Image (cartoon, rainbow, N blue to C red; front, side, top):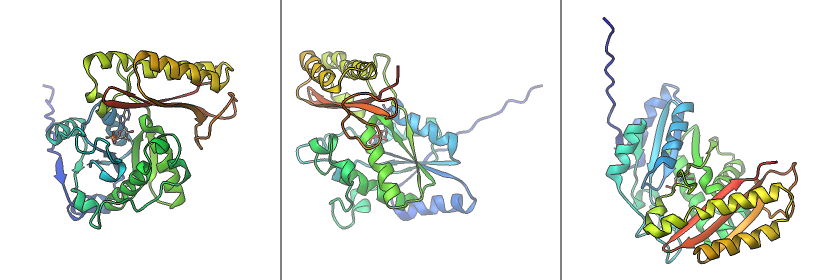
Length: 294
Ligand code: AMP
């Protein structure tokens, strides 16, 4: 008779302080396990789960952090109204097989007050950084603290936040942080809209319009790969987004995929990326796509 294997899922443990976290991760480290870190601000969706799945593939233990980081929000931004649902997040993480949830308080992360103590450097001042001054200093600060609390071997970030991924890669190189930074492709809805916690802000009619952002940057990427100058493509894209109802369109940019400097014309030797940010109703959407050679 075939044996029936009973799978009992362990309940994911939630810890809230650096010392409680150390109690959990210490024995893993002593046992030589590879620890993967997935930093999030919660309101989890399938995009976040892709990071957890990737982490599970290449690490022995996966620590997910849930922290809505005040230092990466500017004045007048949505820090207070950012969606929070820890119970739902925990259930999703348990299903995905994460090993531990670290959900620290603001005081635990910022015992000396909520100011960013690290600079994101040059990469942090363009594109998103130009529209959200100080945003990437806040990101760099919290990521560095999460690294020091967790001591992971690898950390997983979505390409959805492409500039953030580059800022963190550069920061770890600059500081010689011994953490491997792994980028995970953007998870999209069937209509192309990148999944985002902020999509909850969209009304039903805005949700119908939102995929135009992805369609537009895809068109820019194709045109650029086909030899059209970026300036023409960007002007047409801004107009298209405005006509669809995006207001304002903060930027559409075609940049060098590594240093984020603007590119005029396609070259097969220079990997390029199209990035855009625009507001639709209450939601400020960002998206990006690689330029692939024809
Ligand atoms: P957040 O909770 O928005 O700070 O995101 C936490 C991590 O999930 C970041 O590394 C994001 O880039 C990543 N992420 C968010 N949305 C997606 C998505 N649609 N696909 C892949 N990764 C994502």
